[in-house]
Amino acid sequence: MKIRALLPSILFSSLLFGQGNPDFSSDPLEAKFITDDVQHFWNAFEKVGSDSVNPFKAYIDQGTLGLKGFIPYRIINADSLLIMVKSRKADYLASKMYFIIWPRRKNVFKQVMRP
Image 1 (cartoon, rainbow, N blue to C red):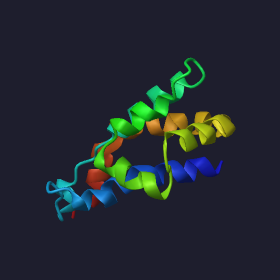
Image 2: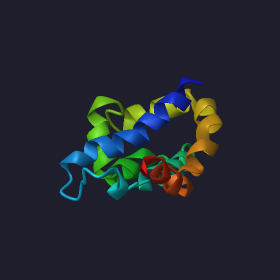
Image 3: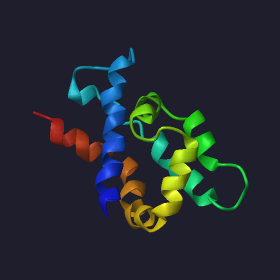
């Protein structure tokens, strides 16, 4: 169940690593919640085992700046991610529902930041 704690850190790292992005704003109300990596991850996850090609290669290639900044410190590469997903598939599946609803919750997070 530790995966439930890990996946939010992936999402929040997108915001942290966004500081290198020229579009980054210091105003929390101007924050961009870019959640493309979440859907791309689950698309790749669904393809695991259905093809001889590692689906996480495409996931990483099309990743946002946040994902690309996170890779060297946690994911490492597509092969290591595939190994982790295969070994902890049940944990990922148990957390999936939390990440499918994440993109729909953007406004809730912004409301928390309002003065």
